[in-house]
Image (cartoon, rainbow, N blue to C red):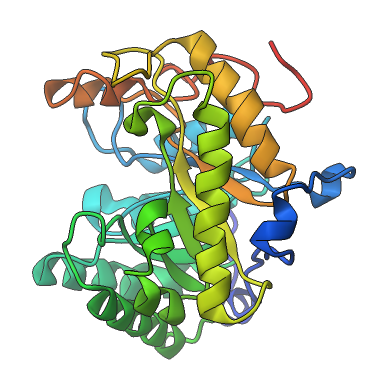
Length: 322
């Protein structure tokens, strides 16, 4: 592997990350569908820090993940920097992947000791590897939904991480992700104000929706959250993504929501592809099945778009249905 001199690497790392902004109002997007694939949103994937057996991933494991996803995506989302040495192992994989991959890097903001470890990982590894492959930093995931922090405290931590990254000489968008209904209700406004981008998580499965209304539910939820973000920001031009969505292919039913590969495929092609055609990026939860989660849940192991052996369960191309 060829190493770039540190001065040049630092200069290159200062290049800004690229975000994809929504520039139409939520009301306009309700009836909008792009006619040009270049205007479509991007499909991203959430990836975990552990292998199917529960062991921590290495750089080679992340490389295998990225190469498996390359047919459909060039962006992944993670949840922490220090857990399983995620940042240390992921950043080299992003730069070594056969395709040009970037990541939304997660920072876990609770508890205080864990948060300190997360910031220490940023301090240690961003200067070492740079941020050319970092699309953004997500402080927390569903922190408000779990009531771990108030919106104002979360906003302070978003500002804190942004300040830390700037002190290292980098300019990277910093935001957060939470459940769509928390954004829509207005209880997260302080976090929205503090963020450069907002991710809204939405699972019609966990709302007990059946196949006849799962698509309308997802589209409506997404646009309702976007409408609130645009209102709080005072502009339609916001960087807004679906931070998590997906459908389990196995495990128990939840309300009227059933689980199968066929339903997951239908949800993807009917619901996700519709939102992608509105120019909104989506992070699919998740890339790969995680069997080790079976000790705690009968359904969580089955949310992967791919089986744990990195074979896709169905086509993830919106122009194909098989």
